[in-house]
Every structure is written in structure tokens, then in C-alpha cells.
Length: 198
Image (cartoon, rainbow, N blue to C red):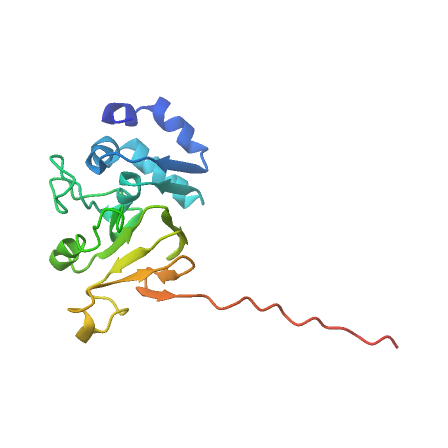
């Protein structure tokens, strides 16, 4: 719904109490903020995550999940820092953009992280997703996720002016607390123990 009053009703919230997953579709992210931010629905979505549920989304539905709302202007989606700046905050201190390479947006997030360097900027291309578990995520799909982190450890300070972001490919992982990419090593099974028959 885009009706904030409806998002406050017991009838609308009731199915969320037993839900294991919720999906946010695309559109304009400010409409999602106007509809759900600080409502009963928002609180119930937080409870869903706390009990181990999953929240996903595409396009605006991905962007709304960060604490900072990129492209949240109600007049146009080309303004990065608009009249709506608060997202649902499922990912803390994070701003998310989407359609990254398909729409040639890879430099747009720089405006946000230059003015708000405490934020981690994440850009997700089409046909690509990040699967978050705890404080880490894995990139899946067919394209890339870009990381913008002016205060982080992943890019050496002397290189940040020349390389203000980097890409993660499918299979790459990222630690949201340490703000570092990693690729897990192969899983090694414990050696089998055999005993000689006596």
C-alpha cells in the first residue's frame, strides 16, 4: 500500500506477524518512506527480521532498506540528496542505489558519501543482489555491486581520490562492520578417521 493510514491498521499488519519473508517492489522510494516509515508496519518488519525472516526488494525496494534514502526526492529521481533522506534502516549507516551500471549511475553515490562520509554507499546493478546474513553480505547474480567508503579500510587513503569506489563480483563477500571485502576459502572437510580391525 501507499496509504500510510492503512499501514497503521491491524488488518494490514496482521499477516506480517507470521510472515517469514517480505518483498518490496520498485517505484519511487520516497513513496515507500511516506507509506511505512515509523508506522506499525515498519515496526513489524523489524520484528520479522529479528525472528530470522527475510526482507528483499528491487529498485526502490532495495534503496528503502538503507538508513539513508538515496534518490529520495519527491520531484525527480535524479537528485541524490532530496526532500526524503530517511530509509527504513534495516542496514544501518548505509545508502543504497540501484540500476548502477545499466543506467550509468556509478559516480552518483559520490555526492552522498562526500557530504556524509560516515555512510557506506552501496550501488547494485540490475540482475544482481546482495544477500545479507548478520553483518556480512554476498553478491549474487550476473553483474556487480559497487562499494563507496571514504572512511573505510578497503581503499588505501592515498588512493581514495583516484579510486573512490570499487566493485564486488558475484561470489564476493563484504563485512559491513569491518568494511572490508573478502572471498571465503574452500570448505575443507575434517579428515576421516579409520581404525584398523584388530
